[in-house]
Length: 274
Image (tube, one colour):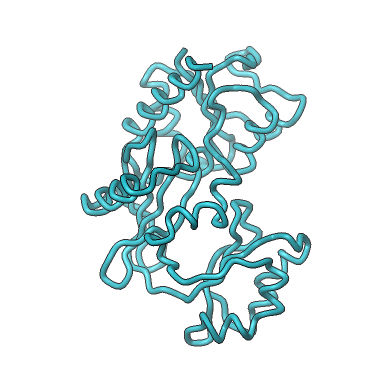
């Protein structure tokens, strides 16, 4: 069974139109569906019919949208968005030597606030440190933070004392690329930033794709059958910035025909093995 793509409505706006068109061009059903239609006890309607529990489905949208599919619907594959595996506290142990943040600490946000001065003494550069939540919920945006703003920047973690954060030294970054990995294969890549500023382009140099392939050849562990690698250039070489989910991250200007084809083939294989 060829998979049906359920794309979250109202998230990517006009940027999602080419994705929808490409899926349909390849002969599959694709529809925008609202987040509310995935809540417990609800089922989305596509072409006038409810999506059946045994359907082959690929969900695509935000992290909460993907999690609703995984939590409340039995579709296969449903969504590639493992919250546990895409947490820095999990995947850093596998990809550590390739990470941009080579030296870091992971600790509860409330403890980071308490240990502010120690953290700045170890990781501070020009009175700044880099900090981000380890999980995909993004309680605050990962960024370089000045000492006097540190407590307020991490304030959202006080509502859940178990929330972990990564703290590391700030790094100078040039270009950044998103690389799509499907079924152990690098499928496509797209530039999305230069010097920290949004700069989306279809350009993805061969050396970036080869770097991603070298990581995959060395690290056998995978967070999901399909996921994203974000890569950057810093200090004259390439580094892994972070992992992102396939079902909850934008493709920028990756080659949609290749991404849709590879993801759909993988999804069909998973569905047939049920």
